[in-house]
Length: 382
Image 1 (cartoon, rainbow, N blue to C red):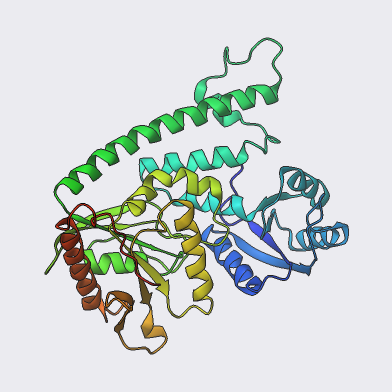
Image 2: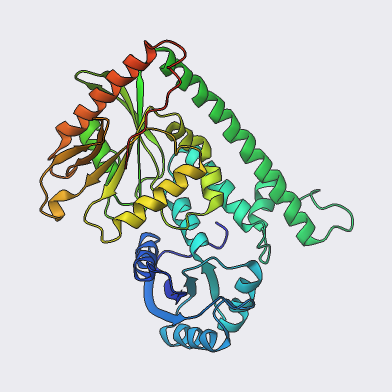
């Protein structure tokens, strides 16, 4: 859909260093994104610049180098590790003579491949359409086929105008369908709140091990894999925790640096489980060399969706890869702030259940406080 790269496409990756401290991590992440999209990386072109070129992002000399790499490797696609403007994308395609997409389009494509639930598919399609609305350089015949082309084109209307009108109608339809699903979820959430069931959301950088932790806590069979964005659709289960009773646990989509804003907006309804949660378990890959940077990126997205004020406990996962022992740390108020565990081996899982029980006790204490104090916000240091 939407000129999606074919499975097994040969691609050349392009990454320019503008002096960012995490440049190497970003390039490695692009490799993993390409692999997650089932693409075959046949070449990498790197370079350094002070600022992007307005016309081609990379500059004429670097574009010639990219074109040569594409021809020599017989690649069918070039992927830039950056966000390109529509004009830059068109200029690059003309000069390189192959399809060109940016990091945002690649992430959107992975989401389109992975979404399984009806709502997830609607959310991804909405994100794609809103991103591609500025890129009406190819035909939108898929929309015409869905609607039936007869009678759609107005008198004297150009193809581009028709495309925009079809696009707008589809976006409106998707938003209406997602709004209905959101209302259903709101009803379910209010029912949980009335029954005073604590809600907990797992959040974190992609591939941090959220789904493995979710399966370990719930004995569910949520899909897990050592790849980026293995989980897209929010999965919710009710579990029993000694000392806390029933707890609703939600496994959510992982975040990543430069997560497309269109995607965050489209998934906002699903992520409201996170916004409304009584506790966030922020799962971190303790073995990753840039774990602090990943923590910052997750917190940026949480702020974007309005979930940055929710109580949060940092869960340092994959301690088995670092040879660390399980344990927990408390903040200056005596509340659990960090947990070290391995969801794969099960070490430290009792500490998560302890944290849930303590948080449940805090909620019960807050609900019994006089109204002048019940609005106080619990904060847990990360």
